[in-house]
Amino acid sequence: MVAIDRTMQKLVDRNEGTVSREIFCNQDVYDQEMQRVFLRSWLFVGHESQVPKPGDFVLSRMGEEAVIVTRDKQNRVHVLLNSCRHRGNKLCLHDRGKSKSFTCSFHGWSYDSTGALVALPYHDGGYSEMAKEKWGLASARVETFEGSIWATWDKTAPSFVDYLGGSELYLRTQLLGTDGSEDGAEVLGGLVKWRLGCNWKVPCPDVDRSHGWMTHKSLSDAFGVGPTGFPVRRGEGGGQRAYAGSPRTYCVAFPEGHTMGVTIPSDDDPNWGDAGVWADKPVIREYLREKYEIRKRRLGTMASLSVGPAIFPNEGWLGRVIRIMHPQGPLSTEIWTYFFVDRDAPQEVKDALSFYYERWYGPGGMTQQDDMENWYNLTIASKGPMARTLDLNYQMRLSEPPIHGPSRFGLPGLFTPLYSDENHRRFYQRWAEFMEAKDWDELSVRESAK
Ligand code: FES
Ligand SMILES: [Fe+2]
Image (cartoon, rainbow, N blue to C red; front, top):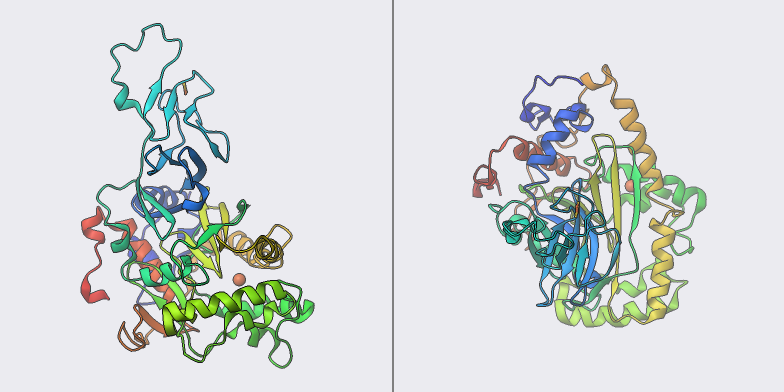
């Protein structure tokens, strides 16, 4: 193990725009962030559509720890540590299902869907003095937001909406139905889970727009096909142009560590059904056309707001897909991918979207694999004792102030040009604050920082 002789704020030097490689491979740093970041943050654990009825449950994770997301008889959602209070055995062994209780496979202690200890079989009166109410499963604080479920172990953390720090508009937009309806989305099928050899922070901050034209160049230039199989934009500029984004797209960051790319909406934005990518899928095109018109009536210009919010620390969106980066040690991460679809969409549309998601993000898909290769290789190339002495560079547009605060476009957040490292700098600065702060009092974001 390499000793660290710098403070967290020096490992992440905002003024210099540099980040030490130690934070991506040092075991001491990792152990501290499991305590200081993952025990104190609000973490995405799933969506209500995964547990629609009382008795439903689905497994999830909070950092390294496994949790069970349950819905009890009163229709309340709980997030319970999946570890028996007797001798610590993994309690629930099934990814999802329906059950009134969870019975441990070791000595048979049983818990209900609120986490209460409800049965102690074959003990012959041996627990008569034990206060059973003290031996329920550890239960996290839970809040739901437009159907998404978030949990934290920290009783002193702010409410989830306060934690979002003004970014809730963007997260809410992502979770609406295509027609702009609340509660209109559901998780499609199961999750895609994969493990790769890099630190959990590497894929986290959004946006790294300057990598796409290079990393994913072969996708559009060599293959010339997009996720549906229909040709994507080609010609002069090729991949560069395809990944450049709209001139109305910006990096947007919040002092709370949330980062995203935002395209300013306009009344002239085309109907989503007319996006070229669906030209060979009439069933999706027609569905989107119809729903987008309803969305426009509901949301006006904001109908076309395009955003991919990455909520600190380990949640991020790609289109209508959520990825969660679960740490598994300093050099290992398990990425869980949730695919969303309109709850009331015809089966034909769900099937077509399922194919699209598989082709784009699945195990044999066309993207993420190229990201993974870079993330793995940068890890290998950075963990040696010589490499660790060399800081990483996040200096693009280092001294430029944000273009504007919340007022100019009527949208919240600190905007910088799309080609900028400001989102990364904000993410790592917030990470350093979590690593140094003793409690949530110290983590409160001052108004002057907004
Ligand atoms: S470890 Fe669960 S009942 Fe003993
Ligand atoms: Fe990428």
